[in-house]
Image 1 (cartoon, helix red, strand yellow):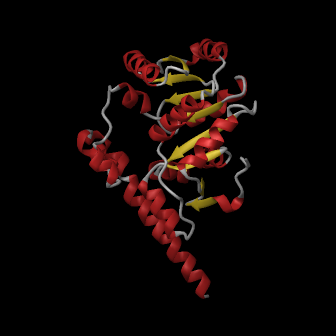
Image 2: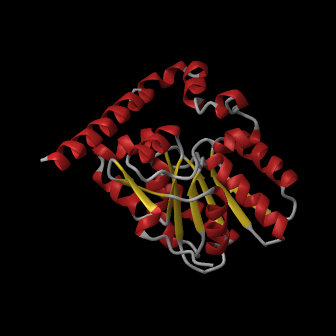
Length: 256
C-alpha cells in the first residue's frame, strides 16, 4: 500500500494545503505510520484555522509541512469544491481518531495512545471511556495544565510511555505549535492535535446533536450553547469572502 501523498491528492484553500482523502484512506495511512518508526504530524483544520494562517506565515508553513491535513469544517469542503478539487468528505478530529482506534482494535493491532490536555477530571473521564470502548488498546495521559518549567517533566512522562499515537488537546493553533516544538524530542510516533475532543469523549462537554452534525452546522450549535464564541465565529464570513474573492480574481485573470 502506498502511503505517499502526491500533489494530485491535495487542494489549496487560501494557501493551506489539504489532502483529498477519505476516512478509510486516512485510517490506513495513520495505522501504517504508527509502524514505520518515523515522526508524523496530522492537522485537522477548519475555516478558523485557515484564517489564523492568513495572519501567521509560520503557522501556515507548519501546517503545509504536516504529513496529513484533513478538512475539519464544511467551509473547507465547500471551498475545495469551489476550487475544482473537492475533498471526498469532511474529516473531523473527534471522529477520525475514534475511527483509527476502532480499526486498530478490530485488527488487534497493538496501539499505545497518550492523551495530553484538558482538566484532570475530563482526562480521567475520557480515559475511562476509551479503555471501556477499546480494551485491547493501551492508554495513558496527563492534563494540559502545566507551565514551561514543567515541560521536561511532561515530555519525560510521554517518552516513558512510548506512544504510537500522541494526542494533544490544547486548542488551535497552540497544540500544533506545541507538537512541532516537541515531536523531535520523542520516540517516533504519530501526533495529532485534537482540540476539545478529550472533553467530548469523556462526556464533560456534549457534542452537537446528530441533526446539527448531519446538516453540517455544528458551528451554529457551539455558538448558541457558547455565546462567548461569537468573536471566533466572525472568521467564518471572512473566510467565505476571501474564498469567493480568490475565485473571482482567478476567473478575471484567465480572461485577460
